[in-house]
Amino acid sequence: MRCPYCHHPDSRVIDSRDVDTGIRRRRECVECKSRFTTYERIEAQALYVIKKDGRREEFDRTKLLSGLRIACAKRPLPIGTVERLVNDVESDLRRLGRTEVASTMVGEMVMERLKVLDHIAYVRFASVYREFTDLETLRREVETLASGRERPSAPNQLPLLPPEPLALGRRRRRPAGQP
Image (cartoon, rainbow, N blue to C red; front, top):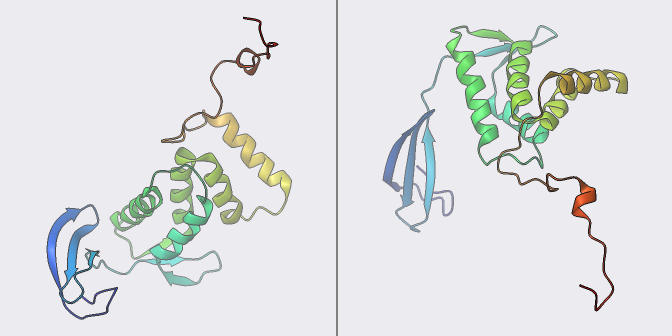
């Protein structure tokens, strides 16, 4: 394995662990002693996505990952959440045992998970995936979302305001010398 820092062709494995998607290896460069992590995945049978226009494209997890990163940008999600979502979708697609799946199936699987994970990311993704062309379509989608379930709690995020009403939280300034 080539070192990503000095590009020396040799490295040694310090630690190996099984992870959900394969094997995680911690490596150390023989030359510069820098450490880095690599992941090994079983190369599965090629999976093709049938696009809306009938074209067939090989499933590209990096393309899905980049689209989700844009939808989830600046959202209070724990690190690794988007990667896990992509891993889950890819695993579910491969479990189907098919070599071809419709792009609509991929999109719906992603949207199901985003709806539970984060409503804002869901609306962002849906606006591109469902090709919203006007505000009315967007409004209907938001209303459907709002009427469905309670808003998912944002993981690891503290509330911005105290739970009591704002009026109770405000205090009037007293003139100096008064208790």
